[in-house]
Length: 446
Image (cartoon, rainbow, N blue to C red; front, side, top):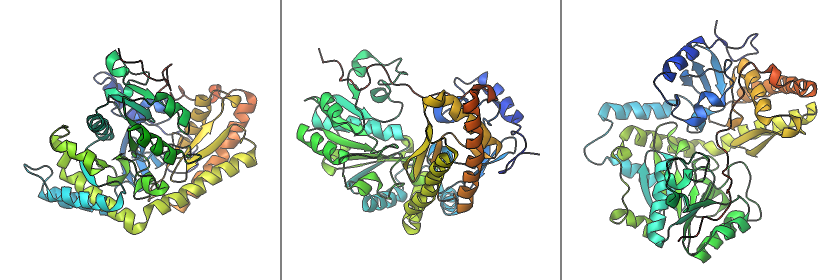
């Protein structure tokens, strides 16, 4: 019988998952379309590799095991799986069609809605993925300023201008690599070290887990303005989650351009670029940014329904309330059990992170142990609490109950010095590593 969300006696049976994985490996390289969803992010042999369906905050794998999900499709499911209002909007639009030979009225309806809720949305472009709009933002910033260089902080997608600053930059010419560099969050000195007269834009996630200190975002905006550099917010995680209007509404800092995806269509593929009209008008003729599926109507319908639900139900407040109970509860447990010296939960209430320090052992092994034991108890977890409107108080209560038992087990394993020996499979892997010249100014143009 498949496992349920309970203190199961055994780890889930995942034979169907493993069989699918075997089939995939012979024809797919790699087997996953999203790195954070791949098998390297889960303990092999314990975690499922393929999911079958979802409802609310619960998912079922292909072997029939049920889990309480805190990954929520790596962010897009702000309301929850199979959320009725959104699915009804999709089905209604499906009856009329998916993609058309001309523009669709939903493009205007969505743009008007976004214009009302996002502070900098004087003008709006619609696309499909986060990488689409971050790359479009960089391109139009270069066109508007007549400059070439980019300073970035965070994760911004797979395109050349960004991925060149990571360890997975093969296939990108040196000339392209030299145009991008990085800075450290909350460190204005590192921004100043990278800014020069050829810096077109500074792009960053307004926050990931660390909060801005000493008016960092306000000071960053002033620094960019003084240098004639455009400020771009990558709001894939913050948009519609920390507030409906995103981090720019929450912090009162309005960037020149902003990029959105993930949260605002509850899982349908769509993204937004918003910004100043004088910059965005360059898309009329000078800058090319078009795609066949930019006006795909199912995603447009989902986006309109999702944003309206967020406004009417005050979803960001709900995410914060449930997320705070979970974050604070974890830290209270860690202190009570005496493991707060090496593990804690940090971040904003709507999206927090459980981390482990090397003082207690290999952090990836510690994380893997917690993951495998939570999976046994029916919780799908990779270190994050990506909160959704479908997570309930009962879900939070159960999760804290599971954390109590698992942290007690972790404490015992750390004391015995045999965490790795207690793993049932290979530990999880890091997604990215920083390159050796991280936080360095790019090479001077020759």
